[in-house]
Every structure is written in C-alpha cells, then in structure tokens.
Image (cartoon, rainbow, N blue to C red; front, side):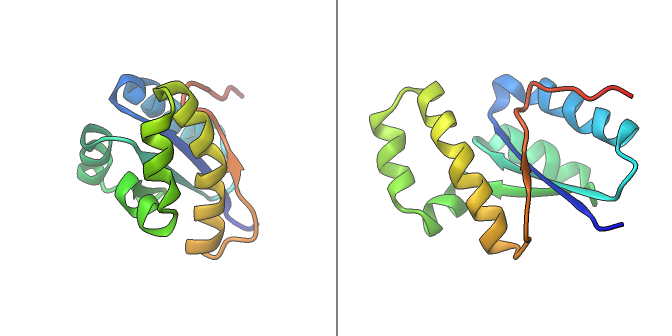
Length: 115
C-alpha cells in the first residue's frame, strides 16, 4: 500500500495535543504514513527535530514564508486563531508542491484516532 500523507500545524500551546495525535496515528494506522508538521514556533520545531522520527517532516514558518511571502503579511493582519485557519490551506499546498505528493490529508492538531 502507498504511504499516507498527513499535514497539521500548531504552536507550543498545542504541542502535547500534537504529540498525542502522532502517537494515536502510530497505534492505529495500518498503512505506512508521513505526517508533516508546520511548526509555528521553535518549541515545536526543536521537539520534533530532537526526536528524529522517520514518520515526521518538519516545516518551519520561515520555510512557508519563503514560498508564500503573503503569509508574513497575513500573520500581521489576523488574530492567531484566524492565522492558523488561513495556514491550513497553505500547508496542504506546500506539502503537495514541495514534496511532490499527489494528495495529503489535513488533520487538526487536537485530534486523536482510536481503533
């Protein structure tokens, strides 16, 4: 079976939820998968970078801004919540284009999967 591709985003406020999301996928996902995380701060980026999980790909906000410069403007114009909602579409597009996947599934960081 082909690898499933997921994308999520969060900052340190949601780090524990993001960890739980990943651990639940590890428990229940029967297919190989990769989860890309748009790390909205250094805490999230550093946590996953130190873990060196083969199933995790880390995207920094700076990387996103390099490809989509309008994101920097949107960050200044919107509340944190509105900005995160905006980033979900950008994160999907980023993963599809930068990593050349034909599809990916966006999941909120505060989800957990059960089997």
